[in-house]
Image (cartoon, rainbow, N blue to C red; front, side, top):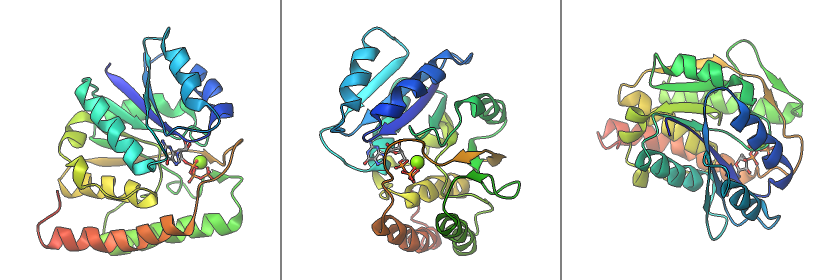
Length: 238
Ligand SMILES: Nc1nc2c(ncn2[C@@H]2O[C@H](COP(=O)(O)OP(=O)(O)OP(=O)(O)O)[C@@H](O)[C@H]2O)c(=O)[nH]1
Ligand SMILES: [Mg+2]
């Protein structure tokens, strides 16, 4: 498996079928790993039965809702163990357009990390309530000021890592789970000297299912950026 798209799911039964259809029919010979956290709506069983006769579809079924960051950490371990060179993060809810994968791959052949950015050419977000847009935009300004990382959209979750970048990060030391997880991964890659490039993406609010956004996720990110700065200053960023 050269190219692996990791899709974490929690109650995405309505979205996962059309999403997998799209991903598996793209002309890039993608493998897809769904990391499901015992979704009560049966997402996990559904994907598992499909995976039995689709060799490019893989599933990790975990015993309970352990968080997005933890789902990606397990997904990254799986990717590294199975020899993936291009490793994607992607949401299951169609906020991330599968047709952008080609653009990610073109850019990933030149750099180490490609970030899908909502704030590169103005604001390319569709259907979000204004409040949520302002929160996200402000969170990114804050992150840029505190960390100094030259990235317009550090909290986005559509991205592609080259194997060498992922391998350099100690996944057991990556602790955050929400938006902070996205910041933490990119920051660590950046400070290790890997080349990061943003490409514009169109982000569309989920078309089915429910949001998992909450206050805890926001506070985690507020503190995490300072923690990252501090660890870096102490030379203890791993
Ligand atoms: N495995 C796993 N997946 C999760 C967990 N929490 C969220 N997800 C998935 O992670 C992706 C992003 O979550 P979303 O709920 O879409 O987060 P968001 O885009 O910030 O918010 P909304 O789209 O408004 O719901 C989706 O595919 C979710 O199903 C979790 O605890 N475990
Ligand atoms: Mg979403």
